[in-house]
Image 1 (cartoon, one colour):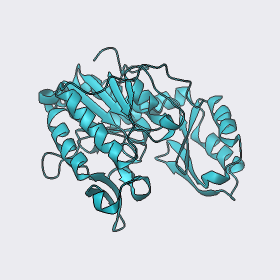
Image 2 (tube, one colour):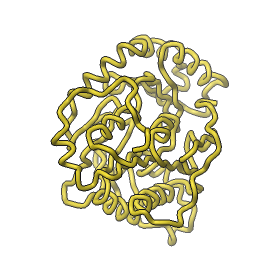
Image 3 (cartoon, one colour):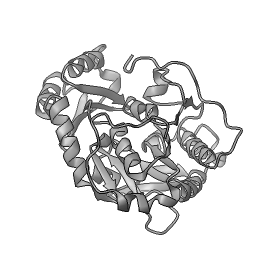
Length: 315
């Protein structure tokens, strides 16, 4: 890995010999990808803009209360199976562990689970599906040192979020908070005001669809990715994501991709080494899986990464 995904505050001092041996045969590439609206898509986010008879066949990858919630194309699923055989595939999501465990990604063997998974925006690291307690302790220390207490932010959200346009208030894994809002009714300037208030306290804000996330700055996908790379060993890192909470994940990789939809696309965000795709919706998820696999296999002919400078986050 060429100087990317280096942990800011050092890495938890834990034994990693088993981790390295587990992934030694595929340790050349670590592929870390956001899930929702990057690899997998809800019905609302599919963006199928073709006649019904031409729509791609879809595979359900998440079921909750007996209902299929998230999908990918069958072609994307096939690409993901090949990718999992040839690289260390690391889902990197803001979902809590419980929400993540509803997702059943296709893999090379029956019952396959990713060797590593990043949940709660980096606050939880799963190793072969099991929470890593050393990482949880490490993150607790970083949060105590680098951000205001969760309770202070939760109290502020309760005061400043009008019930008229706030449907739900939630705390995720006792790490961060989010609101489910009626986006069209958000007052002008409210997000910017909240962003400024949170920034003064070491927190960040992200608006994703109908959800407003307030997340402590030390809690990041890139921090957990750095831990994974430390355990796997020297690797080329690839990543993908669609929201401002994925920007650090993209910047930490040797190459990254973002879809043509989402918070990053809406703000025109890009960076050296990050390719801005034209595809949107579930077609973007398939293209991201295709780009990942092509890069792992050293195939040529894919478009060169965008090289424009990245505007300030939240601009």
